[in-house]
Amino acid sequence: MFQRPRTAALVAAATSTVLLLGTIGTAHAAGDGLRSSRVGTGSQLLAIGYEHVEYGGAALQFFGESCTASSSPQNFNELPSGWNDQISSMRIGGLCGIYAFENTQRTGARVLLNGYVPSMPSGWNDRVSSLQIRYAWWWPSAAIRG
Figure: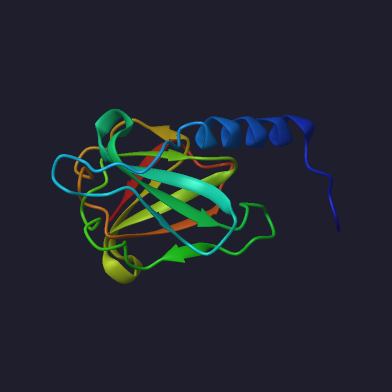
């Protein structure tokens, strides 16, 4: 049965997307040579990973299709060259949530993330090697899974 999305959920998703898109600047080189990059084949910006805490340094933009109840999870089994174990903060837009994994191919320990993450949860700074972005309006802020 088709259900109409709640107005509050739509407003929250639109606001998150606008705030997320407002964070994108031009690509720049970080002090260690890491460059801002884009990954994914979709047309919508879903999340941004940052090299440093508090959204500093180079940025890795994750593009895909929208996060809705009917959309499939979007897998990033490997991060682009130079980005493995480099993410220190993230901004995740709309109704999206992320499973961040310690190894490529979405294996090993994982952490659940959503919203604005100015610094990764304890033990997760510079640890992410792959991730999955999915519809997740119900997730808590960050939860570590072994």
